[in-house]
Amino acid sequence: MKRFRFADMSRMLSGSVSRRARNSVLLATAVCLALACAARGAEQQDADSLERLQSEIQRNLPAGWTATIDPAFRESPRADVEKPALVISSADKLSIETQFPGAAPGQEPFKESRQVEIVLAVCPFLTPEQYAAARQKNEEGTKSRTDFERKLRDIPWAHKGGSPIPPSAFRARDERDRRLILEYALLWNRAELRSLPTHYLGSLSFDITLPPENSLIVDRSKATEYDEIVKALKRLLTPYEKEDRAR
Image (cartoon, one colour):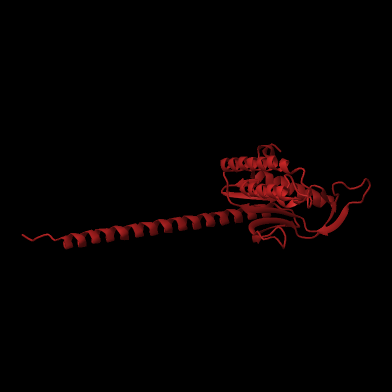
């Protein structure tokens, strides 16, 4: 009878471990490839959906308006954030009049000539349920900022801020002020608010930016065309907020 040696058992075990290790590596690789393919498939589907939306909008636009896809749209030349966006714009510059808030009675509106743009910036997709949860978290963050800000009301401002007032807007006079501003800055950072989309279509979420409401297109025919474009967008896309759905 052949004698079984510990060396034989060691080789058998090492072989079994090696096979299991190879199988684990192969399985992990297969999973990674599957996830990568799925992600790439999602990106392809989203690109197809965005291009279909562009074609649908362009087909129904009045003459003198265009719909283009910008894969790296920036809100301004100095903005750091780039997003894919579908941009609807007038082909030519239009005469615009803007009445600024707080203008003196009888003051002439600011007049300029520029292209009118409607920007549909693509955002990370959120289901309505995910949007509601993110919105609730934003509201809680705003409340915590506002509650803490009340403790700083006697501290002078370095400059005007928003609502709630950011930490940078306060100017410390002494160590107590410095400490309160520091605590407020830490809370502000912890309660960071998330930028949320306004509308969705399929698996795409959009943050829609329209021209300011206090800016008017002088040419009535072009103003009517713009209004019709906005109405058509509202029929195509679903707003996240219920009050927007009723409009």
